[in-house]
Length: 354
Picture 1 (cartoon, rainbow, N blue to C red):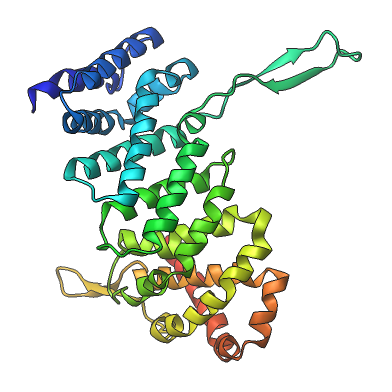
Picture 2 (cartoon, helix red, strand yellow):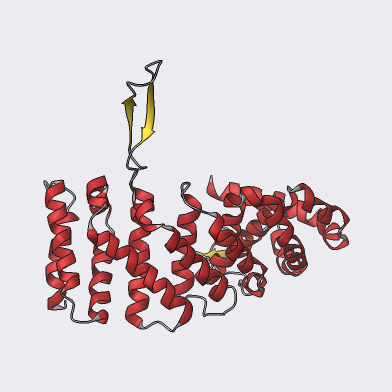
């Protein structure tokens, strides 16, 4: 191990022990030491390398338990962490990233996602208002603080929106590129959390779904591919899921803007995938040591087709978009197969995962 990283790793290993007697004061002291190690980096590359190691080591369930404290949340180390991720988001949008950039991009986003999803909601307390005529007890949020409020600021969301609209909807990268992994992770994080400004991301996500990369993701799914790759997952699962769950206030508008595109894609998607979905056998089969054939879990094709049908269903539930489904001869000709595919897909998925 790099000698410069021995001290921060040793500090974090104390935090990650299953049983530890460290107090909040101890944890703050350790975070102070980690920040000192980070500030003592000789240059930006060394600083990114150190922060990458810190984030990797801190992503431990035992460490996350100790960090779930409103006083610890406000430590300067986490402010630095958030600013670094925002800087890397901007860099990823406009200029090529170095290997150290990509590694730090991946690990900082991973730690931030874990901190936001693992830790509890902002604290509230009950207060008694002496000036209230009825002297009623009421609950009032006071100094709400959480990792989500620290990291998912308007500045962060605007930068995330920018990389979606200016980069991923317009530029093509190899299937396992770090951008698909990180931006997909951050988009999933934003989908899961309630108290953030989702509206900033709606139009950029729509741009991704209206791009050719959505259809291309379906075209590149292999018959026996066990799982989808990060690029496919981003376009055919993470983006549609965000729209389905977080575009409620603009549901009609968003559905209308997607309708023609999604219906246009459907013909090619169904031509490629429906014959397989309608087969009675499993998507893939394997043989054991005795050469006996047995069914595997649903492959990526069946899973991906289910996601497209979910998006179609979401758009069709919007009254102003439903007319496209009723009058569109393209979709009407596929309607019987579409219904059958939806029923078979649902039955297969339910059977495999019960």
